Image (cartoon, rainbow, N blue to C red; front, side):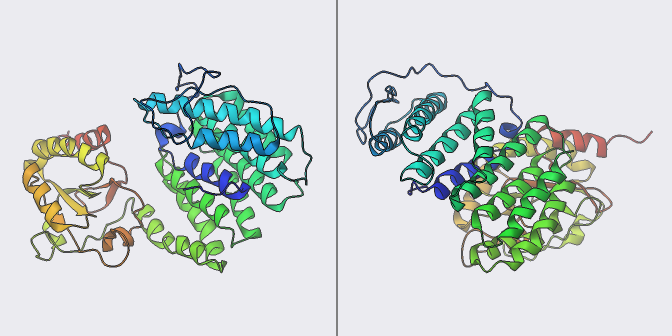
Length: 400
């Protein structure tokens, strides 16, 4: 995570955090997070373990360096929150204090002087966090302040400001749930990336944006268009990390193009035998990319089991694609949970937990669940939770 306080590293971290949030967060209305913490009280010294989150004190007067050190101390406090709400409340209060500290610094220095860019980046970062924690005014202030910096004499700060302006526009698109503004947003990100294909931060923003579109209802087509726009720009990059990001596009586009088309399923079963896709002919099939270490994947299993019991005699099958690294752990889990459907497993080679099918279909997050109809064509790329039951009810609805 972030160690440097340079503008580029600081703000871009929060861009990634914002755009990698689940769709439920991206679409949530502001004001959902509340806090009982009050600024102005004494806090524990940085590094000291406390039973809960400390109170955030009033921002002191001081030199730019003293104010930056004050903010850094708040961020380095070693404490154990008693709840997620308490942690979020502390983050909100730290972000609020950081905006105040940044404003005090900016009142002492001018653009081009020492500490100006660092303070400006701190303000942007903190306003963004406040916006994501439900402060509508902070979100609007972040976009306005970023807009004021797009022509900054500092190239790094100007570029970060441009990215954050785009983040503000993305926030509006996702908050509305309407995709009409999506194509223009994709074009703006593509234009910025075209100006510097080696810019890893903009490349990351492009990836996160396309991935976020995937999570929106009906967003698959827009996501595919985004990946197609970004792919040739990533290919032009001489930055190896950017090129590596682009290498996953082929698989992602392959997955997004599955709707209404057949899905190829190959691999080895957990018992070591080759999997025969012909055994699925004429069945409704749920393909589940999952792992035992994935909490949401495990939480979804009871739902899938219930649907399996309900429809298996009518021609419903499930094929699990395990992304586990340890076969023994997987086998134990399958036995304990009495999972009745076939599991495909390949011993990972090289980095990560990549199953060949996960790479082939550009799986970047799990659970990913794909439903195939009796005709062998994909019905939906998102068959989790209630959506699975609704889709199966339609597919198995009695004729007439």
